[in-house]
Length: 241
Length: 241
DNA sequence: GTTGATTGGGCTAGTCTCAGACCATTGATC
DNA sequence: GATCAATGGTCTGAGACTAGCCCAATCAAC
Image (cartoon, rainbow over all chains, first blue to last red; front, side, top):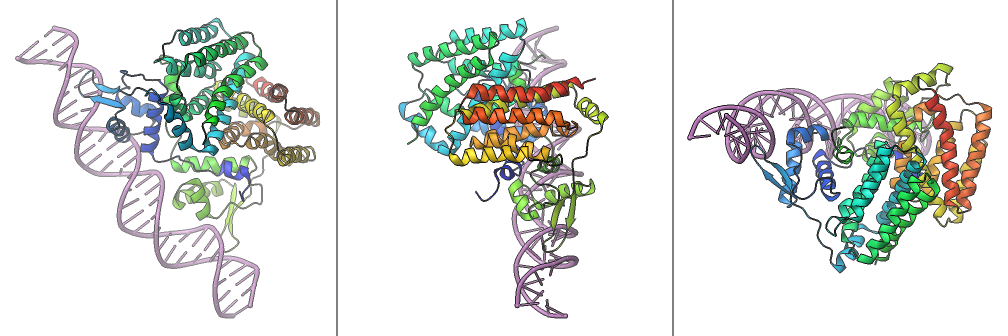
């Protein structure tokens, strides 16, 4: 690197791609993170275009691409719309190794570090906050939903649980950042086979995170999240060829 | 809020503005964060446009705007270029109140929470890492530079110190995010009068952060950063009318 | 002084993106 | 069966953005 890192950090590209590409990416996020699940309908084109700050033409190109790729089923007429048809594939044993190596060691390391930092940060902040009864309720509800989840709902509810922590801080910047981090490894997480023993292990860690936050202990919250994420991170790193 | 927060988080605008506006914003960041200081030259237009991923036409419009606004002095010919003329103004007593209230309570709270989370996260991650001698050297050098700083260099070196922590984690995503957080309150920080007593106080906190990181104690690192940032945050919140 | 490399200044043709209007289809309701 | 509201499908003209090219100014080196 012949430039200062700060130079590289600030004078980086202002746009990730063109509007069409970014829109496809964003919609794919919504689908893969489970914000809109199988069978759900996206908002009407006019409303969605306004939300995303793009023209209907561009949005329609993106929807068309996702429809062609088999993620969406578009129906016309009243009560029509773009319906999600995608369902995360059950991973085979070789899929994870392939997914990890497609990403590359540098990017994997970057993203795991990023995720660890922002999720620990969010948990710690939330543990520092005076929580209202409503906030406690949301957190406990997400936890119990996750614990009651079947295998096909687990990923979606796990995502919902993790993102709730960031959302409950009240900082939309932080929520956005955590969603972004989660998204960047969504494909890897989806490729991890879910074993009963792992789920039970994760369940304990989720409870520890909630307990630390409710107890107002930021150090414990930080440690619980770090331990939880390090398990996944070590697993992924182990699959680097 | 009649929508789920996750819906709002993911289905948000894909673009902050047009390419021109985003470019102006980015260059202003580089100037206000001190990445390019007074008298320094921006890279040649062709190179800078390539770095930012935009056309030269758009970049030139942005440079023109900043030149008109008095941030840059553009000179033609060999050894010419766009030279930074901006110097952060010495704040008067009313400036801070005005700056804080221009931002508004919701956004201020959002940004402060965001910054707290990501900077604590970065410090904690770095404290967990096995540091090389070179990394230790960079950290100690930034600290000593900051301690030796005069009043006119303090902001710039303070920024450099804080960003170094994120950069040393090796995650460019994290570095970018911390830079972004810092940027969002740059105007507020610049409006805080620098008193000798505050600087000494901050100096001690900076040392505590470095010591915790070098000692490999993530909890202590997290706590030190939180304490440091909470001081500033409380000050800013106090200026809300 | 002349030269030549480097840099900002400016032009053009083409593509991307947008706002807005209008058309086509669907299905619940009457 | 007719109606009508909601929704996707399509077109057009205008503006933003880009790539590539050439011009103009500057100044160190010769």
